[in-house]
Length: 167
Image (cartoon, rainbow, N blue to C red; front, side):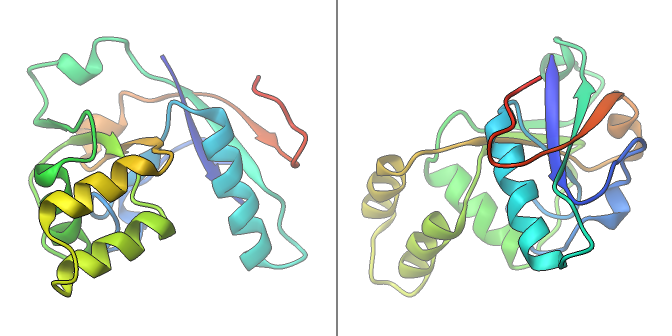
């Protein structure tokens, strides 16, 4: 199965230690099944990185059976639900977990605004989940252990623009 990573770097050897803390699923290496989503991430990073950077999507192959492999501690979220919401909030607060791989929806800026309303008591958990399901939800697969990241096989990196289509 193909996975994509948006960045301003050609990443042949992913490193879980270089990820940011306090993000959706905690520090790790983030990928997606959706090329357009990775391209959007790359283009956003290009804008903030400056004129000397280019948007890059790195492409990897992952074994089709990896997300069901019993040799790994894997957390799967099929939709934005209350368990996912609690997990994302905890990770964004810096609370760590012991999962090798986490798969689930992306909490982008619009979604994060909704989460903030929930945390401040403006929205109930039910109202928050209902609001989250209104937004277009993309997926992410994050790798959190050295053992799991070795499952990714680098294929290539592409410099992308707005009009670049999936390989």
